[in-house]
Length: 109
Length: 121
Image (tube, rainbow over all chains, first blue to last red; front, top):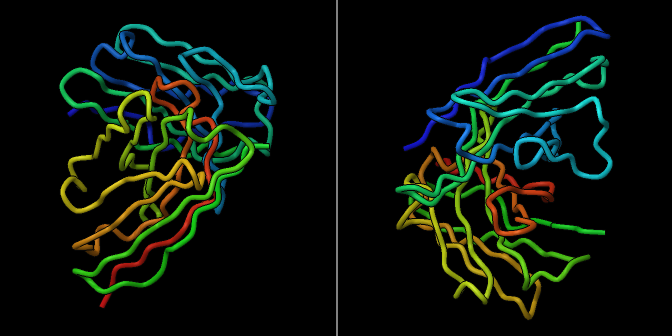
């Protein structure tokens, strides 16, 4: 089955730029979607189809996808960005199923 | 406003059964593919099941870990999504979320608040 690999944690100071990676075999051939989840809350869609941004999501959140790595970039990180971030694809080759990365805990120092 | 509200969670013994529901409002439920996603305590997200719309014959897909034990269904007349859970195991303990796929391309733009299922003796 298809696997997505994320770093368990990323830490940085307010105002810096966070880059959260999502690795997968030829992930560039997939559409990648990103979600943010704060403690005790449901996930929220941040980025869809690699670069799309739902209404209400600030421009500070952006995505890219190429080769074997997709990246969620959060510019000018704020304390309120502290959360878990998950990448996700829909695998349509052998198995038709959703696949999530293991999640990355973003800590704002 | 799109709303998804799950219900039906609770404590069940190993080998037992439970039926989860997800009530949808604020959009044309019958148009959309719908999913269940779960999250074990302290763990990450795991996709569980998909049901497509009428135009796609209500076809379904399942994660390997639940195939044959969990069954997704929908009632478009009631704007409701269901998950019938049989032969439950301790590893099925999780918060279960329903999620809407906006365009059939395999992502989730709206989520419910989740319902907790605990499998324990």
